[in-house]
Image 1: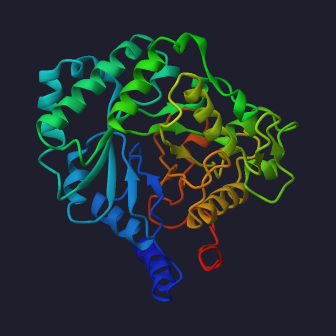
Image 2 (image 1 turned 135 degrees about the vertical axis):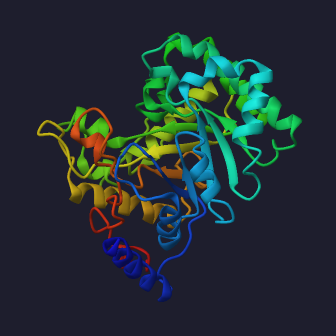
Length: 350
């Protein structure tokens, strides 16, 4: 508790000096796969102290939704993958919205419902067939209850939905998605919802560190690359990945859909074979990303549309399976102290 208060005091001191300001296009993922995380009420204090006004959670945890009432923090909730088959039924979807969403809104500012997570690249191929019907049913329930004006319905995908991503203009979806992807894009276009993408330049660098320059993935100064077809210049991989998704959608006839980054981040610790997973690189990646967000930047393809990004993640989560890096994407330790020095005082005065 003392450590958390110490961190809050430090950040609030910066705030009192006018150093911190809110960024409308930036949020953070609030995962809960840990046995030592603070209660939601303390999480709200941390988000406020960091001037973060947007977050995403991976369920509809009633404790969190109740705690976030009147907090002014916007929240995107998620339908767990195992619920999709049930929610294809319009009556079940209506019941879900009436019990999971309606009791908390508008006191809790729910702005989006993510239906499933990375379904197109998951192990259960049958879930894909449930996705769009479940989204349609949930949206119809929102319409019936008069909530559709306040929250969108979408589904986050991993970058592995792309068959090609480089150069960005070559962006295209995997051929096996040619039947389902137009259905999803048609729904998003009709409801004016964004396409959410989980984009991690870290994984691209880890997979090919000899050919991918570290400065390019960390947003550091570098020569960058030029798309030979569009002549657009890219000085970082994240923007290139986002534009590849935009090109892939355009090739299916849906070039006007907004792309938002539902997850991106960098691990501070990894196993010996997880090249680049260091606290220094995590601080540089997330710090540089924040600088871009403070400037409300867009990508080279859409320079006038600020890119909305959610950092992964708020906390290190000690119960996540997989390699060490999976448990070390957090900006904060569970006690509320910073995992690494993000350079807030220097960062937010520029």
